[in-house]
Length: 121
Image (cartoon, rainbow, N blue to C red; front, side):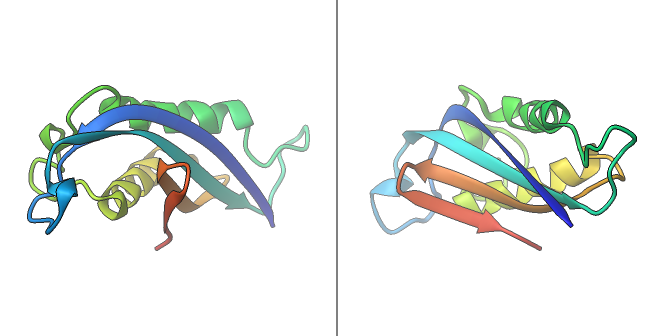
């Protein structure tokens, strides 16, 4: 099995509804997002999935969150934009985007250089 990981980032603000601390207030992050895909089959030139294509796939999903208030972007206008929910939603959107050659294994969201959340179904 081959495992491929790429990383992207975006800058955005959010507020955690009903959070019992300061994070309930509007605040921002530079979010780093890593996606890992796995596959067992190589194409004719020996690639499991093109790094560039995976970077483009990730960029197409996270561009929706760049320089916005995430609370205003569906589905976060209804659900709280926690790192947990953000990682799951990004994962689900990538599953729709990535081809049949690989499967999305996990999405990791970094809220800061020292705080990482990983979603795996």
